[in-house]
Image (cartoon, rainbow, N blue to C red; front, side):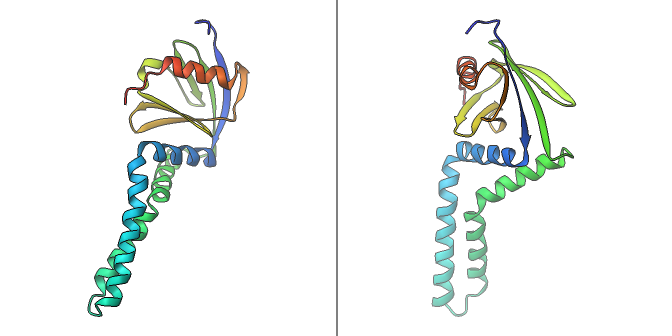
Length: 171
């Protein structure tokens, strides 16, 4: 790719796309947690049921174990909902229109009332998922770019090649 060549595209980050990005971030960044939480939750529920039927005096502990087990099993949904509520608290409308311009030196994003340029070296990780791309300026802070884009200049494949060439995985 020529170092002067720019890729330009735009997309709308609506609620469903943002939830999908948060879910993919959870699956990638919390890979051990996503496996262990449902396992521990299931063990707690089985233990609560067993304790409830074997010890007639124990009533509070099985209820507590049952509630914790359900919370552990639903931990991914709870995480996505919590992050989504934080996102919605910071903006009033239902979707965000984003214009992006990328080159070999970095990426410029224009989001209505905010815009900025970031060099590729400032990102610590990138993950290509079926539904789009996660860019990480910090380990647990991400930018989700969905696969459905309106390209003005360039293609998805050229953009992904640019990301892979520019963003060194540091975490």
